[in-house]
Image (cartoon, rainbow over all chains, first blue to last red):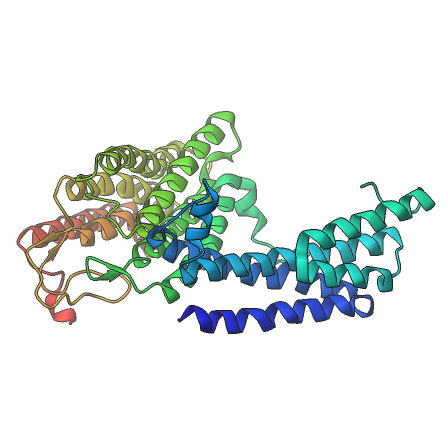
Amino acid sequence: MPPEDLFQIANPIAMLGWIALTFAPFAPRITDAVAALIIPMLMSVAYSALILAYWSGATGGYNSLPDVMALFTDPHIALAGWVHYLAFDLFVGAWATRRARAAGINHLLVLPHLVLIFLFGPAGFLTYYAMHWAFQMRSPAKGATP
Amino acid sequence: MTALPMTRTPSRLWHDAPAFTGLALFIALTAIPLLAASLIDTRTFLDAPVWQKPLQFHLALATYIITLAFFARFLPQGMQSRRWRIYAAVVCFCIIAELVWVGGAATYGTASHFNVDDPVMGILYGLMGVFAVILTSASGTMGVAIWRNPATGLAPALHLAIALGLVLTCVLTLIAAGTLSSMAGHLVGTPVTGARLPILGWSREVGDLRVAHFFATHALHIIPIVGLLAPARSLVWAASAAYSALVAFAMWQAFQGLPFLPWLG
């Protein structure tokens, strides 16, 4: 399968997970199963398959920035990298949603962080934690341990 | 985290042989990414898709150790004792090493068995031979222990068949696979069309030493089935002799450069 086709399939699948997270309070258990398990698992199978099939043929490596940049010149490896983002960003989004729910934080307050995790993963992770800690300082009894 | 309602595997297997049961399931599940890789990978090695062999190994080794886990109930104390647990752990390590080796070679589109051109792969091939003997020894060790166990609760013919099947798997596999590994490759002769049996991959044109390996290793399934049906121990002995002859025949036929049962198509 050409990498472009897989890319076109992977994006909407990840999007499904993000839509589910948006409406998480309506069906938290199903949302969590979809966004933290099923979709990341599917993505991980695709990622593993791409690495198993194309890693040995790719140039570059992990040791220097030019090496990493060389890796991403291979369409299959670039696609694998993209699927990696999709899978782990969604997983972190699901984690934040679950975490906020356990800490009694209103889901509406989580939504901006989900948008940020969706677009710029680690930045959203930071802002989520900032909010989470802020809530803990307000009511230590309510929040979960960091 | 939502725990998905996973189907429980029979607790008897977990109780008697936790390491083998767990590893069998793990091997089966890790075949999924290999299957996915086989769908997108167009590379071939020796005219076969590169992921065919790792998938066959996952299937074969999962079948092997789940069978051993099933027969573990006829050991005096399952695999609960310290010695059995250590032995089972060593066998599991060898199985994982074989799978990583075969899968790793497929990743790089190169040979695993018979790879002696590359020095590192040559050393690995030798080491994997040792591991293969260790993992095969599990059937023989279990066969002897079940043989000696007076309290299996089995009918005499079935008791003999299970013990003998396990021992035969060990002995015949060591002979068949040992012979196979002493050659330069699994084929005797040069194929022209590359015709082979589906799934098993045996050549339909020339001798294929993997046929004998396959039958040798499946003694632990076939002989116990005979034991289920046979009313007397003598029939089990006769069937075991006939089965060993079949393995010998398959080896002889391969060395003649002939495919197994050519009329199979």
